[in-house]
Image (cartoon, rainbow, N blue to C red; front, side, top):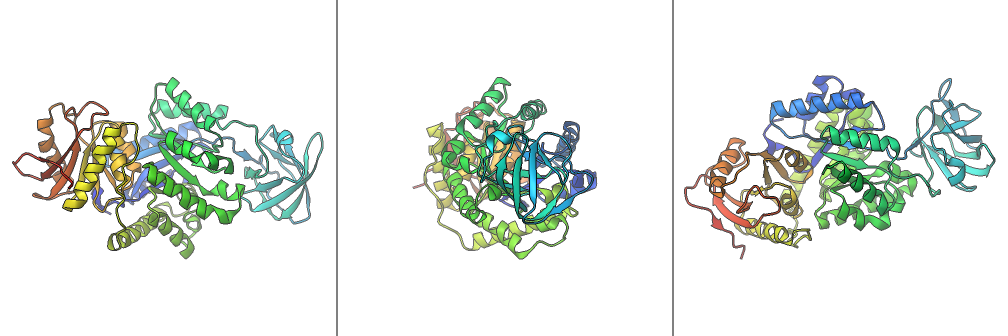
Length: 490
């Protein structure tokens, strides 16, 4: 795969780092195969290990001059079994099982769970799922020390597997003490995004924003939708987040699994209409944890997310712990290239609605640029940005031409990696608008995004270094000595 940014897919690939990517050769192969965002999963590993991975990604990005964003994923109140001793064991339907809160080793006599409020929050008749729903339990009674359950779906009980309580209203907050420490570390080390897990109520994201503001940080906030309680508040989360992740693993355990595809499509559409990035995650190529080739169903799953025009698709265990991490990314890229090729051959009518934004002027300028580019058949749209906001508003329209996001901010440069169809480009700060065209031509020609005389639409500002001052749309022939013309989409 070429390092030319234009040859990367418009749908961005998120890959989780872990033991499988500890070798530099593996990590470099994975990044070279087309990853735009690396995920650090705080549910596993130490902060020292995450720091090493962060440094390795940043070093590769700087050497190759290819931006890669880094996303830290908070654990949230994930409930897990303790270590199973002396070894994993199988339980069959009809087996009586006792669940107890605490940190003692789990045995056949009692399974210990990392949730102190277990006996307070779970009632008789509630379901308990273990290991992403592979084992089903039903609570039949409670006593002072344990929940007495009967197994309704058998399976293997092994160490540290997740426990889901789909019928229980949990009293735990979305941000644990561990999450607060991990958030502080993420801010201190300059991560680009932080993902909030097990969001249920508007107050969950409000608390994260307050912590972020107190730390003087503008780290991007990704809200993970994986609890049914979050769905009634989806519009609030979309408005307050920088991106949404459809975390289908826990979502498919917490509610009927056949509802998940429709929920995914609904969230994707609503994010797209709001101009907010959406990531589709969990088990997209799960069989590639141990196999070199995915199933046909998995390929269809990835393709359908791309057909729905999600901004990004994510790999979890496939790259973090799988046997073929770079191959998984390569397959994801090949599916993306093929599906995006189909979309180019069968274009859909462009969405020309103006997206609501905090800055109405930016919305209007973005809409005018989109109309102009479509009317003229422009080679690309080049957007000068100091915040990324106008780029996001242009990208929402899912245009047939690429969008070049030009910025002098390192943080914005990396965050643009999550936006559909956007090619981030790093440029020096420009205070004189007259310099803009010459710098633009050199940059676009240098990375082979355009050829001389290509017609492009440029979104810029009469005050290029002032955030929120986007006020100009121009039409420009690359390499021309003539000054750019103001755009007139009609």
